[in-house]
Amino acid sequence: MLLIPGRNELTYTVTPERTRAPLQAGAYWAQLNFGLSYD
Image (cartoon, rainbow, N blue to C red; front, side):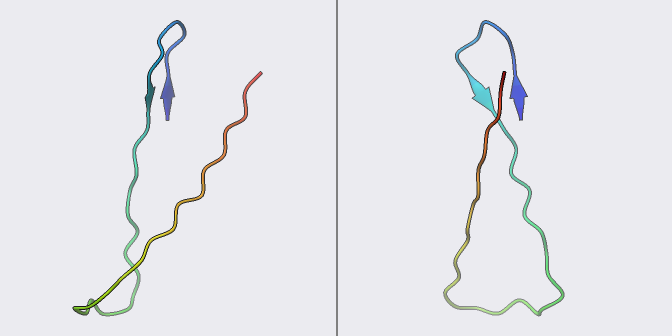
């Protein structure tokens, strides 16, 4: 995540992580947990 002082813009990058399980066609789901701490 990149925060630049004085700008009202938040830029972040999401990187998927591959598991050892084989890829299969069908339904899937994803979960995103987000936290922010600042002083």
